[in-house]
Amino acid sequence: MSDSDQIQTITQGTIVDDFEILEQVGSGAFSKVHIARHVPTNLYCAAKVISMEKMGDEEFVGMMREVSIFMQVDHPYICNLYRMTLHEPFLIFFIEFANRGTMLDYVNSKKGLNEFEAQHYFIQIYAALRHLHIYHFCVHRDMKLENIMIDGKGNVKLTDFGLSSTYYNNLMKTFVGTPGYQPPEILAGNEYNEKCDVWSLGVCLYAMITASLPFSSSNCSFRMLVEEVSQFQYPSNFSPALIDLFKKMFEVRPQNRPSLIQLQSHPWLRGLPQLGTNIAPQPVIFYQVNSVAQLAKFKRRSFKPEPDILNKCAEMGINTEELTNNLKNGITDKNTATYFMLLRPLKEKPSPPVREKPQAKAKNTPPAIPKKPGDKSSSGTSSIDHNPLATPSSKHSATPSFTMKKKECAARQRSAPKFSQTQKAPVFVHPQPSGGTQPRSQSRANPVFSSSMRFKRQSAQLKPLKPL
Image (spheres, helix red, strand yellow):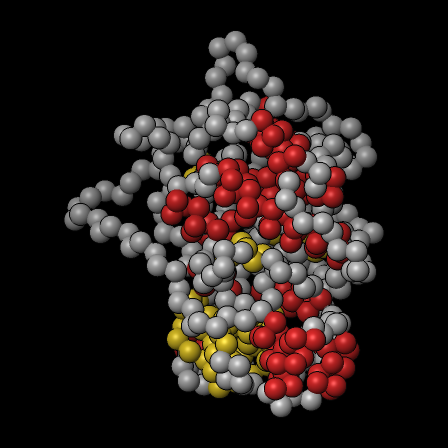
């Protein structure tokens, strides 16, 4: 029986730990995503059903990283875990359902957001990532529009932590990420810190506004990226404050690039919520286990229950004293699942976002030739990616990690200048073009790619990330 067939054995109508599995809305390499209904509260969520039997070491390590984040991090703009259940041979995550799909879908459907709308979403994304950095010393390392979900209320939910790591008393070295979003220090093969997320976050913001990537995703060359940055020009409709923010986030030298905490007072980020003062910083500990059955020994972070939610639980006949102790001690059970469902309720049954179906191609029509960066379409605007995008629910599914062995980075490291977090590097600030050199058009020059267009090298072999 194939992996796909095995996952389908958990069918519509199956009840697992008070959750009724409803129709399937997405799938991944080792998982299926269903709508689920919490029977005691009649509230809805997503059920990510993961088949463990054929999962490789790399996928297992990535899943453990994601579990570690779910269990130890809580933030309104980070996807929330209601319950995790081992139902052999499946591991099931009952998580928030973001029924508006990914930010990638939303941006491409609108062909770019206006600056005001982009600012609204970006401040939420920024707040979530800042929370990870400041309070958990955790770096995402794969920030992109596909890993940002939007729920029914128009709030973002940061997800996909399979490449996340900790920078607590530690610099990272692993070559990870998605081309077009990767910062220079990763392409150079140098050690790096949490500021890699600052660069990628800047790429996300640019892509949200223009529906294109600012830098080419067709290569992984440090020198080519530096050349692009040195010739970069911003669209004329960008506000001065926005351009200034981009210049700070796209600083090539990581030691000169501001951190998220240093950027939070920037004029363009007005409206950013203040950091909480009652949260004790606690580095994320990435679980190291040989099997998912060992996850039972790990506890969730401690929660101080809210009185209103406790009263609702009491009305349902739940022992609130026991529930309070379980929440404070990180113990998870059916009653804590009820508490979290009531804390962030989804009352109406969600449905996948409506996606436009691609137009049928005429018979004997040759495939379209990809446009070069800067080529204009017949309408006078730069081309936009029309490749099929990832389904909204696929972001609840396992995503393969993108890593590269050190030997396979040797050529890149020989050609790239070496600079550590304290050493000086060549100065690459955004100069204006001079003479006859014309920079390429930046408006929708590099379409925002879907996960199906993730960069791969034929010679690159993937390896599991070592938990830090």
